[in-house]
Length: 282
Image: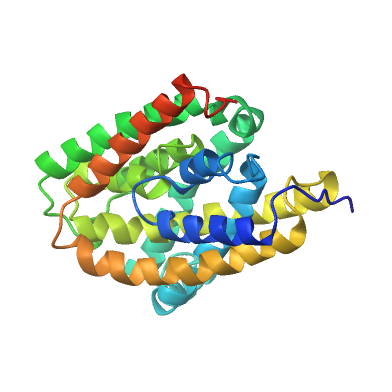
């Protein structure tokens, strides 16, 4: 095992954990926030893709806790349908298959473009462009989407499209929840249905990515020491759980315009900081 003790200390790791918990489930891109604000900390370093993926284990643990009954029902029904070769398939087992199919795009693309995801795609000019561009897409989807379809109407085609939208979040600035929610709204799903499915769809992909990066940190090292990384993950879990509770209560009745405006302002701020040399794009 070779762990590299990074310059980011306990206090900064806790702050990044709060940031991860606050932004993971909102359509504003948690990876972009860690990429932007990490270098602005006193230590001045990018916490890296591994740190981001590991702390996401904390926020996904919050999803597992909040949706524990729904996820358990899906897993049990899916398992029964496998054991009975599909003779006892129901809505929950079908949802299990849709989640697995929707996970394939991000798994395949994540492996194919692993090096770029950890290096060139973390360029802050790309992050700023994604924040602004996908803000406009989210606004259009929320403004013109019919918002009439429920998760019970989720089709195989929609499941694949949701998965492709989630895969776009491999680029910081897109947002995993923002990409899937935008896709759902464009396909006519309600705000609540799109948000709920984005949470469920993220579970296998985010947990697999986090465990993989945790394993890699044991093999090749990490820019952040294990203790602060663990603290950030625990903090992200607590904050993330609170965000889920509040977000799902608000999403059905309120639009996404505040998040659209925030993304655009943040993207323009990043471009300004890059222009004046406060931030380094790489």
